[in-house]
Amino acid sequence: MKTSLTGIQIWGMPVLLGLVSAGGLIAALLFDGIGDAVSWLALAAPVMTALWYGVRRT
Amino acid sequence: MRYRFWGLLDSCLAADARTGDYLYQYPLDQGIMNVVLRLHADMFAGLWGTLFLGFMGLLLGASLVSGVVLYGPFMRKLAFGTVRRKQSAPLKWLDLHNLLGIVTLVWFLVVGATGVINTLATPIFGQWQSGELADMIAPYRDRPPVQELGSVQKALDAARTVAPDMSLSFMAFPGSSFAGPGHFVAFMQGNSPLTSKLLKPVLIDAQTGLVVETRELPWYVTALLISKPLHFGEHGGLPLKIIWALLDILSIAVLGSGLYLWLKKRNVSLEARLGALLNEKEKDSA
Image (cartoon, rainbow over all chains, first blue to last red; front, side, top):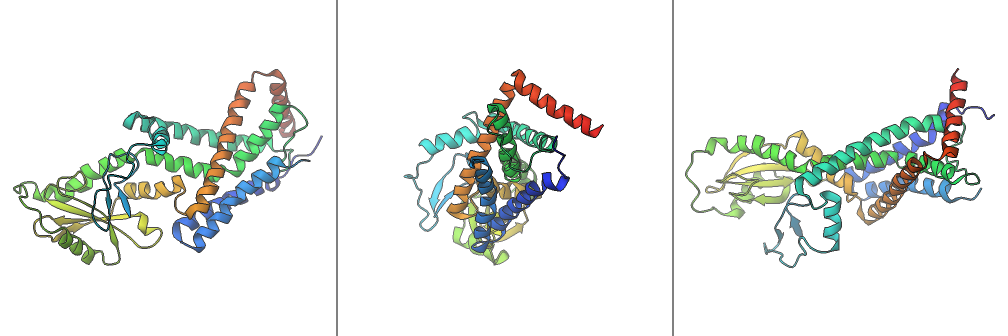
């Protein structure tokens, strides 16, 4: 039987993506230009992560 | 520039901000996008439809929280992003549900919570009108009706003197529901990305064109005004809207797979698998 993962292994990526998403939402709200660009990158992160793990063939 | 009065669904006037012309060609309350918007905002059932959808939003929030609570136990032995494709279809969709749900979680929570706040727009503005606005115009209750309006330009100029670094978002005329019978209310907006979404009402005497009073909007109206861009993703240009659409698709996949898994719960094989997973957990914690 595989051993259990640690809290960081389970929650590391979810927390990181959550913080990045929140940062993107706030950046677009507070700043035009650079803030918008930051929001595009930040909110593309969960989309790209979902595509990367969701459609890859392993 | 076109102005639509307040939020989504108020029957409204659209006017050209440069000429003041009524934009009768603007496709008000018709067309496919209007149908979609109405389905989204009130299902053609007015305020009760909107409040019903707000309640659905609360349930969505509860389902997101419960999903997070379950995520930990389900992922105890699976590396992040694992999708077990080779085994049963329900197992694959369980993994996809967990993956898509957890990566979109914060965005989904924000869109859900701000959506619930948006459904409260009518009671929120009603509270402002019957509370703050009524309070502002109360001292003038016994004045005779205004016979002739003063200059709108003068009223606007007066508003600008008390809000020099702001611009006019819209002007509520005397007799309308966002002004008093004898007053204009100039709703001024700031000039930064954030403050441009907020409003500051300036009460102006309709005859003299002088500023009577100005107040900040209360927190609950501010919360509503901030909720709108955060719900619709309209605060970061076209690229953000496209990303918003992709996140929408992912969230629909989360909902669809959740429904599928719920229907499949009667399927013994999945139940056995989930049961086995939970048994393992109990053994581990014992």
